Image (cartoon, rainbow, N blue to C red; front, side, top):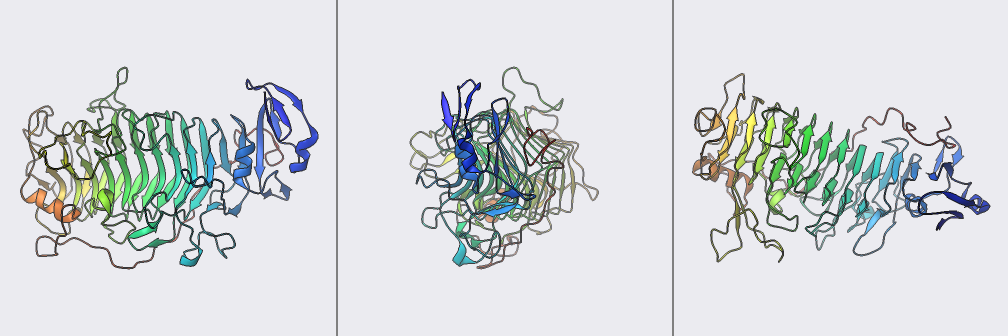
Length: 522
């Protein structure tokens, strides 16, 4: 038997003894069988049972709903140094929903700040995450905004606005189903490119789904606006999402199998979509897009089940973003719409890719130089030099197919253009087919849609001379690159202002599907 706030029921869910004690908390929760609807704040003159989201989370049982009225919630739900979060969820099946996407704000700034999501340095609190779901499945987070949860200035840890955490760094899957809809994740403050800053907007790690992130917006992040990683078969869909003003619009490390990104827009980031293999704690590596047993590609003709399709990647040229130049993500090539780095069997299909100053798409091998944890053994990569820990991941089997390019490569450096391929010889190599540019497709190597790059299945290699050198200059991954004729890429200014958080469309009906309660009476 479980008892919460005077309501006692068996773990199977059958209500046994409703008690009047819940009235002390502002009225008993609304019930639908054994499902409770807990309410936070005051909505249309009707008070909820709680004034903080964490209190409602603590009261909720599996399958319960939590509705949040408009307000600026400075949450301090978890002070556990291992899990510092404004709101920490460890109960399965919770539905957390705001009643106004732009008006329900989980705010990482200090209580008493005069405005929500203040950019005032004196009002920032560091070293926390926003809403964190930890090693539990079946949660919904919907129709709200999370802002200004910042990294620790000394360690660079935390700073994730919304995080489905299935056991980050464990190398194990610790979460299954999850859903996010109509979410906004941003920060109005960063210490220039350095810590403290917001690190990830909407972050999913060590989860094998089914899961989805839909109709969501993230911006001003020092690593990635959206992240899905550490899942050999992620079983995830990102649909109708937008990322802006971040080091990376999307990062997917060692994420593959059934993974679809569609109908998304990534713009005004330093770099757009980046999928990669890494020899780090997001193990196991590498990234492999092949279909798991029993699965088939969502698009006939794709080379696997990891497919990025029907998206719009444009104007990703902004060096003045948090994290620019820091770490592997901050060193992704500025001015690039899509980067496939050390990836295997990804299909990039039917996207619009426009006005990215370096390359529209760059497919490249990845020499990962980071110091790995003991459990990361360069799986799927190569130790070319046993005296170093550099793990070399080849990119192969990827298919860039039927994409529409325009106005890429205007930085004007050698090799800049629509598509670049910087890979060593592999059988099979990478293939390119039916891509177009109204001004004529520009590629390096030239004629990238002719044999041995088309049709698929042949051994091939890319340009490991000038193109590889230009990519290293754009990233500054190995060393600083001075701006010289033929090697000119934007670099961040010492200080810059982050764009404000825009209002975004909310759920058409926030009461849809909610059991009857005083705020949703029908």
